[in-house]
Image 1: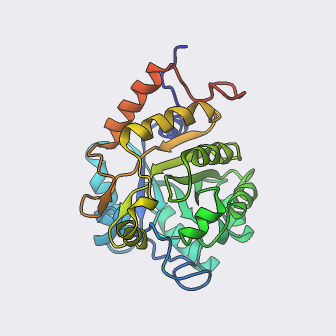
Image 2: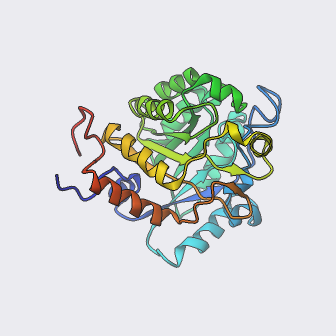
Image 3: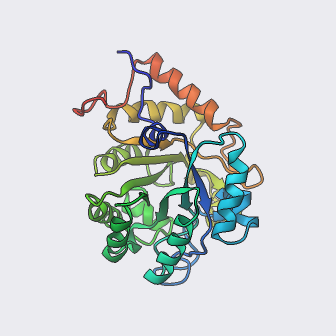
Length: 311
């Protein structure tokens, strides 16, 4: 079977939608999380250190407008004609009074170079009031919501101090659907206590919900997190992926995912100073090149083992 790509790349779908390359600009808009401030817990998720995935311009540029300007300066020289989405990535972008959420979103959307907004958040703090607001926004611009699902295994979610169960994620995704909002789901593959088969079936389960985007990455042990302390104390409780093992996992998963779901990411990279393990020493584009080769080797493509038609 001849395919340009053997999986649906969500960046290609965005390019088709906007008629140009699209870059998400990560924005730290000053939100926090309910499992940090005591509403549902304290200490945050055991795997999380937000500074490990925040670009330098988020930490140095100041407010929302200044971060957007700095991000455009950073990315604009290579792709001067691309479009930009403001990505509220840090912590939970719907965890605030509506007046605060609106003010921060509308500041980003008022920037002349911003074509839309993406909010990263938790499924337990995205009430209908927020979704109603985003539905109205979506009538005039691109609006995306990325839900941190992380796992479908409730025991695993509890062990990482997530503060919600999988059923909450499913409910949030269903409530967000049909509103013109692009829905994303994020999963971490390899959390302690979850077998590869459980992770595989969980990802398939999530992909069959009404989502547009699936974001995956391998578990990484990050310095200054509770999980790092747990890893150092009991490394035998962790089965971290080798790069080859993770490629094999994805080769099993991709053919089981409906072709209408776009993959935005398969792996994550944190700055070397933050990463404890596993250290693969490979860039994202090098990893996807290896993934392309293994899919070609086994003649696999997204949707091969589903009843969904190819697009």
